[in-house]
Image 1 (tube, one colour):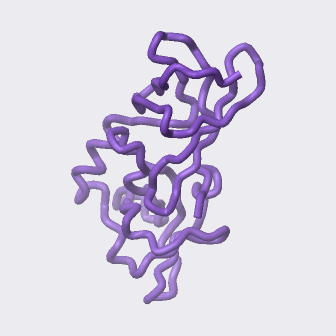
Image 2 (cartoon, rainbow, N blue to C red):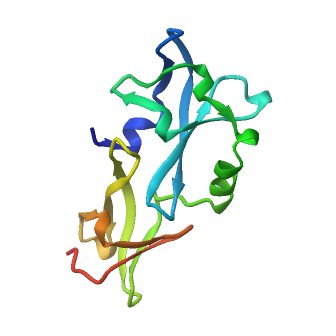
Length: 158
């Protein structure tokens, strides 16, 4: 299963054992070290208690309608997830990030990305600089996921 960021955002999170809706996916939390989605931020409608996070590894499946989890115990408060808090503080947002080569050439900016079952970012779609259209960028070329910039190996995307 490969899913785009836009296909995951807004999905309902459903508990299999309880048969109930636990909330809606609001954000994907990126772990820049592994180039992975570490967790999903879930809005359960009780914002006054704080946001909830769902570790990516707790996901049973992602369909066109919902993100499926075993039960509501898979959701944790952000406050109880210090590793996720530190990733949120780093604040890597893949969408909108500029793409630069190691030598400093601008390639464009990320408009979408795809993740696999393990949460690994497998490819990014970028809008090429100078209005040259768009291109697919395989994650094997990505050297660094930064807060504002993604650094890639030298290659020609045109």
